[in-house]
Amino acid sequence: MRFASLAVLVVPGFAICLACAGPEDLAQETATLTDYCHARATTECNGAIVTACGATSVDACVTAREADCNKNVPQGTTYVPTAGPPCIQAVQAAYATATITASSLAAVDSACEGVFSGPGAARAPCTVDYDCALAQGLRCITPTNETESKCLAPNMIDPGGACPGEADVCSGPYYCDPQALVCVAEGGEGSQCSPGLEPCQQGFTCPGSLFGGTCTALPPAGMACTTATDCASNLCDKATGQAQGVCADQIQLTPLDSMCAAYQ
Image (cartoon, rainbow, N blue to C red):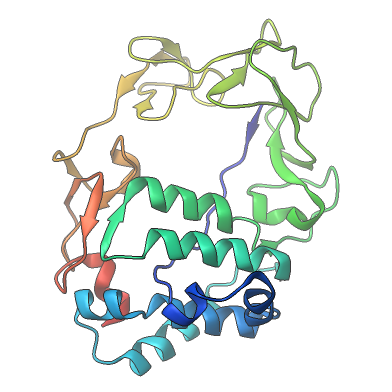
């Protein structure tokens, strides 16, 4: 079975003052949604980011980023204070310098996905994780051999283990085989695949119809892209105002890079 996709709010930076804060101090800095957005805006507009992106000023950057944080709270969710500190810490690691890597962005996605919790109780229908009460450990799961997703507490299954339960989720790069109901490895180059049923491992895509195809490698760094999902690294580097960019393993921020537009 599989999780439904989760759109995670990812924004960069980390302020020196918060980088030095202890766990209790950081918890106070992120105690409420207002606190969290202010702390995150301050951290996003640190010296490295402001300088690299050519922002007008630190104050202008903080004001803009704080407003953007509040505006982009997923509809229908509530802020989870205990999730604020680990999210900020992940952002600190990712944006310690103006060189942003694909792996550090993935770490931010993982650490920050629990910052907002949805309204859905157990077994409520859902489309994405934010529809569910993440604070209660619920995720949006599509049970194996079913088409409708529901809010469930994942039951993680080790590779090779049986996965007959509706909340069973295979750990690592594995999925629940719809026939054998056992956790098997996701497909690599040339493996048979079908969207939603027999997935490919990270860095590969399953082109073709719903009836299936074969796993094909996504473009590596240096190849053309229009979105992050076009790339094996899940990172597409674009210049501001340009529809097309290049796949990248890391991005060196400059005033001309599209990632800097929100700070200028």
